[in-house]
Length: 230
Image 1 (tube, helix red, strand yellow):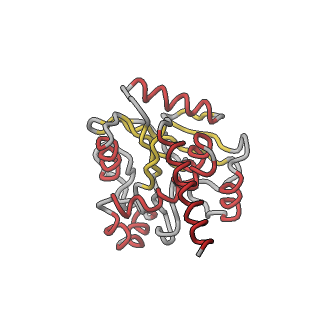
Image 2 (cartoon, rainbow, N blue to C red):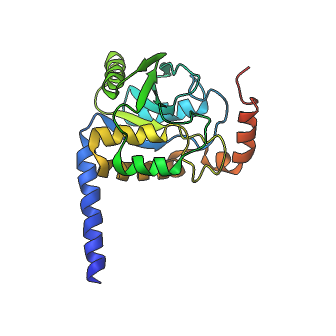
Image 3 (cartoon, rainbow, N blue to C red):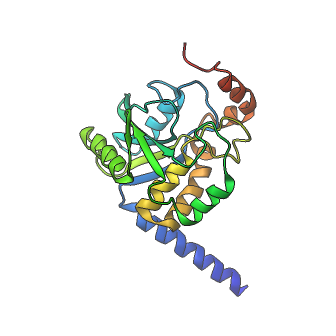
């Protein structure tokens, strides 16, 4: 019984430390926005996933939101959706297989434990490739400031899985989300808020049931180019 109390105390300390650390920080971690794509591109003015992120930001009286991606062919242009300015940021893994490649789980585990080695990631936003994390964050903060942001920027990762079970595969932008949390708040809050972020869409997304129920069909349609805007 005593070990249970000790375990509860440790968990409470970890959660309390993480909450206090993040509370006054530059980003408010939300979590995953999508399980699969409903249409492509899905971070585009008026798309349901874009509007959903804008809604999350409006609920927090925020004028901006940051969405994390895995870089593909897009320029990741930031844009206005209603009253919220959506800042898009993608990472380029210089040692990875690209957005369409298979996940290297051992490599992902190493990054989860030890963080991203310096120089491994590059970053892309608004058609610009940034060589360092600091340059990319300067761009994000400048956009937020120019669009009237006050307080922490709500941050989410895209989350769409091209193939496989999206319940387990965390999808586009997941490593960048963890990376930003780890760089900003440290490894323990990064673990805590990433785990919370995995639960987030089950609680908040109105599309989660539809996406999960039709995941395989939507993934096939996406990979076949049938979800692209005409």
